[in-house]
Image (cartoon, rainbow, N blue to C red):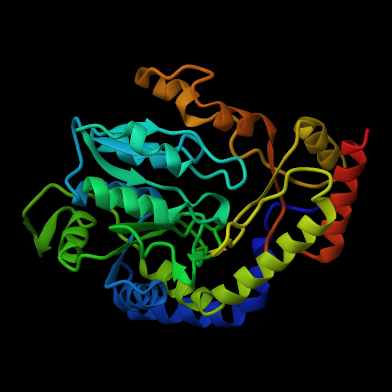
Length: 365
């Protein structure tokens, strides 16, 4: 069996550090928003090269609290991609704002930033690019347009911790960067967790209040906030993993390069734009034979996942937005043809060779 990700192998490499960290935290009696969270926030801010970072309960909350803190709400519009996980649009809707979708580029699966300006109206308040599967969105274009129209930029970095453009990390371009530490991410916790990075130091107190019931002191509440706190155990685990992140990402890129060498003549493989550093949270191919490939992989005990089988603009939950099939054809095509293959730092090269052989055999039929 070849899984999509093998967290057990990663744990085996670091458990001699994990167990003492857990014991230290349990003995400290600091379990929520304690010193490990503060240390982790500081180290993430330093790594991303931003003025500050605030830990929250999930990547979804990172997006939601970012939108709340920037006072985006009822009647406002946020331009984003239809080809991403549902949480991206949920966070917009939680505030009463409206998502406005633009189609994607098939080579990166990110939104086609050349289409942003045609969707801007007097109600547009922000652009929300998603760095899908670990490839940075076209941030140069996003930031140029945002500056021209005085718009906020909220980066969805949930799948892209460590990705960069010309060595500048994602999460350091926009007003905020939103990260997820879901276990399967490049930097994954052993539970849920998230982080907001930000440029304006004045947002720090706002985020810290929003994540903790709107409080500004013990039982003093200046606003209605949320319960969205990163706990000490997750912060402690993430501190250990952060020291290995660059190596984890290097190994992911190594696996991706082998996939590309073996499959580039058979299926559409992920590409990497000039200046972009792709961290391959997923290795996602495209093929008209997608379903046949997935069936054959399953028969051979190999996992694969379709991210995503239905684009957001065609989800029943979002039918009230009024989109129809055919309006965003490239996102719709991607949903019919994409397939994500196993990729993680510990994946053996022999497994990649086995996967590639099955795909090539199917594609040649």
